[in-house]
Length: 208
Image 1 (cartoon, rainbow, N blue to C red):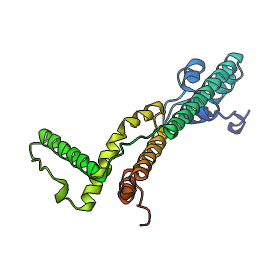
Image 2: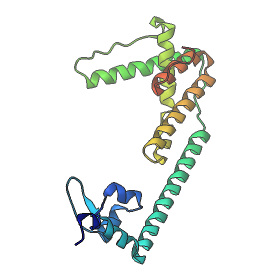
Image 3: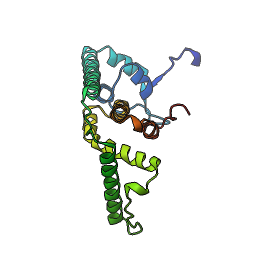
């Protein structure tokens, strides 16, 4: 009489194990159906798994899924590369103004934003400012912000990127390009550009 040690061992595959073997949810539903055990997790008899994996229909379906997944990855990489290239190539034109003109426009823009904030918040009272009453640091901050908003339409370039890490990569690249363009057009604003760029990207300012 055969002992218990002679009985074949019954083994199971979890969904993680199936995924490692190249299975997808579609293949599991189509070739395995309901799990053989549901506690503590869904499990499938290894014998059934091996039998399904030997079927020509399964092999063809798995290969088709792999080709589709590979094609999607390649398409995503092409989309990412093309979108990043567009961000790099986009002309970032800025208005060329005298120091006085830039100051007046920046302060007018700040006062407009302040008034808009008051219209949306009961607790905020607008306080218009003039160029003459500002410190150089305050004026520089508002000038960079006004110039930054002049470049905001370029943010639409990010829409061409796939969501996730690629979108974050594109946003960083575009942010860097915009602040570099402002600093190149108005060299006196370079220190403020460095500060705002670091704040926007979560980096430590250069030289800190």
